[in-house]
Image 1 (cartoon, rainbow, N blue to C red):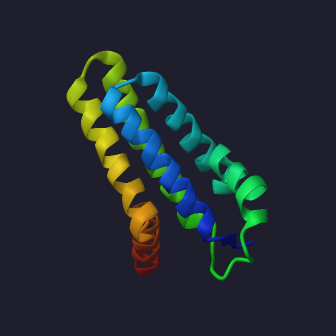
Image 2 (cartoon, rainbow, N blue to C red):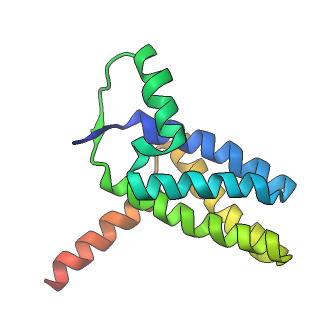
Length: 138
């Protein structure tokens, strides 16, 4: 079943704010929270993440009906990519490898910002490219 395309974009905006706070403060607890959010989104889909739940239960009922829908697989893959980068950033900050924490968190922030502001989901595009490549191999 397709999902309301506004949900992942709203979640990306919240994610960008959380990652910006985590990056600027180098606070492993903030980044740990976002890593958990990514893990829940990767495991259960974007509607099962805390930000997806807030969108579905608080925001969507106050908005008009959705005009755009999208399949849930690309955003779910994007959550997995975000999870990898957030986890690497968390490892960097916890172990004192500041370069790793800053680089990985900055990359995740850049991707979330692109989705939130421009509607361009890097992880979703990666999913589609990998899918096309797999179809060519078959």
